[in-house]
Amino acid sequence: MSLRRSIQLLQLPIPQPGLEPAKGNVPLAAGYLKMYARRRGLEEFYDIELFAPRLANTLSDCGLVEEILARDPWMVGFTCYLWNIDRTLWIASRLKERRPDLRIIIGGPEITADNAWVLQHPAIDFAAIGEGEQTFAELLTALRFNNHPREPIAGLYVSMGTVLGPLPGFRQPLASLDEISSPYLEGILDAADEEMLLLETIRGCIFKCKFCYYPKSYDDLYFVSREKIIANLQYARERGVKEVVLLDPTLNQARNFAEFVRLLADQNPDRQWQYFGELRAEGLTTDIAKLLREANFNEVEIGLQSIDPLAMELMDRKNNMKSFERGVGAMLDIGIKVKVDLIIGLPGDTPDSVRRSMHYLRDTGLYSSVQVFNLAILPGTAFRQEAQMHGLQYQSRSPYYVLKTPTIDLRTMYELMEEAEEIFDTEFDALPSPAERREPVADSRDTVFFSHSVNFDNPVRTSLPSAAQRSGAFELLLQAADFRQHRDEACGLIRQLLEDNPHSTLRIVLEPNGDPASLTMSFLQAIRTACLQDPSYLDRFYSMQLGRPKGAKHIVIRLPWVARNQAGLDWIDDVGQFASIVWTGENIPSEDDLSEELEAHEFVLA
Image 1 (cartoon, rainbow, N blue to C red):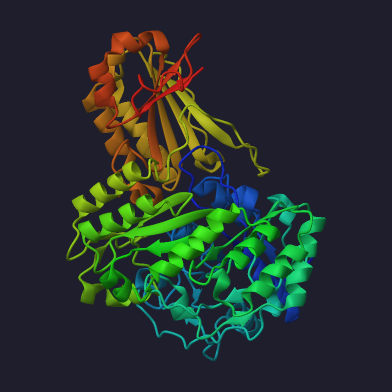
Image 2 (image 1 turned 180 degrees about the vertical axis):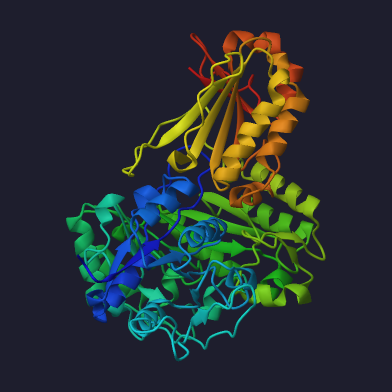
């Protein structure tokens, strides 16, 4: 029997609005921690295991608690982002309830000195602020013979419960990223799992954008050597990778960028994979664009954010518009798609200046696609420190969206986002079609149930699967001849599901066995209220968008196509404020054929 202490490192995925499990949830940060600890000889004393992403992506909140505890860990570490921090802390709390002796450490971009609500959470014991590899290794070294570090560790916050304790000293970043490049080469991660390799070649950023976390975490640029980049890309070839995502915050900030792109091209001569990265348009020339195309960059992302001079000044990101136009034009001319980002809610921007930015982009045509974001006041950023000075009101929990600025109120933000969708003829963060469903399989210890059905007209009922056996994305199918008679029971089932697993994605499918009119607006309002009793991250994320209801909970009414005339257009219109409608049956025209007849919340399951 191994005498090494067991450590589970876990990264929860971005919550999915549909019923399929997340993809692309690669625990790279956890891989770095394990690799650095290995290099420091700590695997002699600790058995460090990365919790399987296929389970993290599929299981419910309670299911994850059971799977973690089944591994009998001495410590559990969580990588925390704004999309998973609430769920992480909920799971950590349940782990502590069951195992008070269990040590909990958290790290990641969400863990900052100014995010007190996280640091004061009673479930955590330690928090790594800033770069985590050295901090984690030094903590494990200190805990070999003691329950707590006897000396302060740079970057390590030691919990004092619900009282904010002393903040740690600054953690100096690794002098060379070769020390952690890379978990793929060490066999800790396998790029074949997702046919994707995540590659970090630089940490730090020469730009100081105030909405970004990077300027507060790094005092300089830190690099991976040419030899390590080549080794990673050779590995990508061997593992059949189809996409290499370059994680550098600004890919073309290095002075030798052209030489770097030539290296990327040389290692991908047969274009086995596509590269993707984020760049500044300034500095991109026709020659650089040709090199990027030769390397097999098919798409890049470029942040414009705003063209307003005051907004640019206040966010400390001044765009040279001529250089922007020249750079984006060079990319488009060579056949590289360009996704351009804009932000709503920046200090200094007004409704008119936001509209000018949107119309400038549309009128110049300098984009392949556009993503418009609401400004998020992220922990660890300059805007978080300056929020009061700029008069910014924002959500107290992630995603920390701005709710009001001195020049833009909440209603106007809704309207501007709606205008952006119209101007660019798109729907941002669109929900997957409620007419589609595929059931994934997770290799957990127990059977995982993805759905549960209740026919209210049948006195014989099956019990809900246990909370731990439900999937993280779950479907509840309810049937009745008259739903009005079963409102309380239906709401009770929904509340139970969400009380058990509050961070679930939940689809409630309503199938009338009789007149659709039994689904009254008051009934649907009651269902919607039960769904949103305790909003989760996805609910807050979608709360800044108008249109059909979006979030972690989705109400779907499933009806035969022949019932559409009976239901009536007024009822169909009214339903849209609460639910989507999926029409079923034979001989239904396709959605394309019905595009002018169907409302935005109507779908067809042929």
